[in-house]
Image (tube, rainbow, N blue to C red; front, side):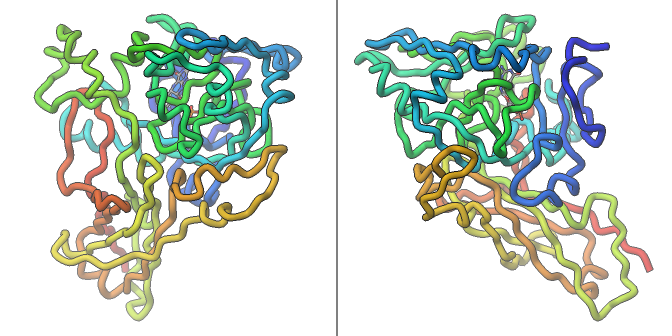
Length: 399
Ligand code: MTE
């Protein structure tokens, strides 16, 4: 029995830490096979502690506040948020900054646990735009940051973090307070009854079980804002970092936008490829994403260790939600991301069996619209975050 015994969970999920807290990813193929949208059951979970227990009958009265450097502080229940504000719906991919950390831990142990490549999931989130609420609250002239706090009780206080106020005020960044995913109430692991959803940024900024928003002049001083979700300079090692609060608190090392990344799903890591049908081909498939609303503009594959590359086909299901004024799940399909890509895409390429027979591995890399490309080499850092070098699969052959 754990403090989370009240939370229903899918047995297919792979546990990445011990029994508690709950940190899981789906088997990569199961995640990918679900398609563009991930069901809540297979959506990755990153919890720092126990899931707050919220009874269904208490949900409408769940309270949250917007305070600090604002002219008009706001206190609302979830019921009021739904009744008084326009509801919007957006497809958003959340990615844990630790996605693909396992590869880093294999090179040199970081302080973090080993995510495979399934620390990424997508849902249609419904809620209210941050920009609408902040417009009402009227931030004061010296306000710069928006701090958020969750209801979870952790060893170092509640979970909290911050983002820049100008992002939160910008409707095009699509930041929202969400209470539904894929048309149903949020599940306990994903923030029931209310969470922040911050498109294009690492999942760690999307605070779950949201209770309080404070507009401030400085970034959050919450323990989890300072000691989590950072890429410290590569020379900082685990022992040294423990005694170096100044380095941790350096806001320049805090991660916000996701970086460009991709992974191959088929073939899977241990998959045996049958060589018996030499005249046929294999469809290599995988996913890619980037941050800050940037589109993935190319995905390249190499079967000769990066000497030559060829282009994969890219499918962007998110585009099919664009340009239509539709209502989904009680929320207007939000147009804020007309020019932005806040979701993953799927890529594929036919490779002949003959070619696979003579290759040792498959390498994939993606590039985004700002011409940022996945690097050949890994950038190791003590928390093991934002790992995005070329993704390699060894080809196992049979027959
Ligand atoms: N919010 C609270 N209150 N507590 C948490 O532990 N984890 C964060 C973020 N929000 C966390 C939180 C991290 S690190 C990530 S990656 C995302 O939630 C994960 O969201 P998910 O579990 O819904 O996938």
